[in-house]
Length: 554
Image 1 (cartoon, rainbow, N blue to C red):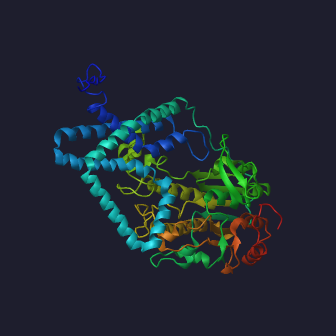
Image 2 (spheres, rainbow, N blue to C red):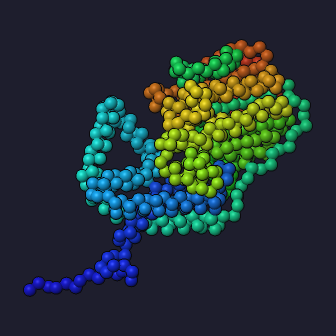
Image 3 (cartoon, rainbow, N blue to C red):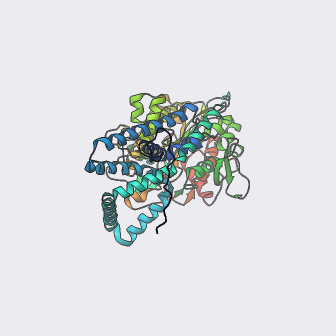
């Protein structure tokens, strides 16, 4: 005799059909859609919520309106997706639903794209291994074959895959409460912008210096691609002209391969092991010679700016990425800076923001558009970060012209985000409207560097400051992605030093670190180095120095 089991009773609300679980039908679709969109927004949440904490590396932290825009974008996209799912269930037959599921699977790939940066080193290593084992063509064929096999499996078993994916999204749906709860908490606890640029140092009442220095650091400027393996289609007339008038180094090495380490090293003459933030919103610097020691605020380490101010010179700075005006304003008479362009900080620069305006709805649209973009690629043309980079370039160019033509500034330091990616410039059209060229765009950015140098020189010549300006041009590190361009790489960075008067070309052939630059600039301002020959002797005398703390005796 078979045992009779008690029937299962589903607990449902009073308005649900008898025997149907509460999380079924339209309710399940709603939860799945919201969970999927929330997961798609992981990169946005990761930036908006983490950046809501105080930090000096940003111009401003996300305000309640920025956080509300992100929440609104999630809810609107979830509502649109839900409407599309319900419409498809009602209007499409079996064949139509099979096609619609493919679009749903494509949306499910967005969260994976959001984690691309986290696995980028692993993918790069795997890519190099495959190319090394079987060559690029065979590796590409195998990748294409794997993608085709995956598409076939998804088409054949899409019903099971869709059911499994929906179940996973239901399980992950509580993360919606977590992210929205964090967002609401960040809005409630917002107390204004925690950190602002300090007041500039008052101008010293001194006569214009007989000679002044303009020191330009072009970010990720590559020696080899500029002077050795320059593409035939790239013309750099301004740089070539300056090379014929300058002391030119053939074996200059940057202090480090990252901006965070190289720029503080260049400015202070001390090798920097690491940089970071503390809760006092200060940039912390750990000297290389004492990496185990507690990091100290950047402004407490003597810099070229503090040293030249004590010597009676006014200094101006234009830069990006590092919070220069947060740490150096006490010894600067002029300062302007911009942040590194990210998908979060550039939400208001998307093409949709251009249609909806730069306010709340434009930013919400920018967050939504950003899901389909990377930092340099977009199906809508230029990505938001490329648009922001173009705007930043124009802003920094204007500030740079203002500083280099100011004869009362004894030292002008420019840290320019060219030719660093993203790349907004098209060298063939001469416009900042390039798109979707993450690798080849570097060559166009070299052309933009040359164009900028021509504009700065023309501005100085027209204002009469060129004839008493010493120009130093270099880089914080070479192009770290040059192997993707032509399979080669080089550790060298450009180093050109031009003196006014009747300059003639010269060369420094021994290898040296550009960490010497700050002390060399100081020696020029003090008058102990006044010609290219003296500068060459000065560099060769100190070429073996691993450090050159600024202000040290010659």
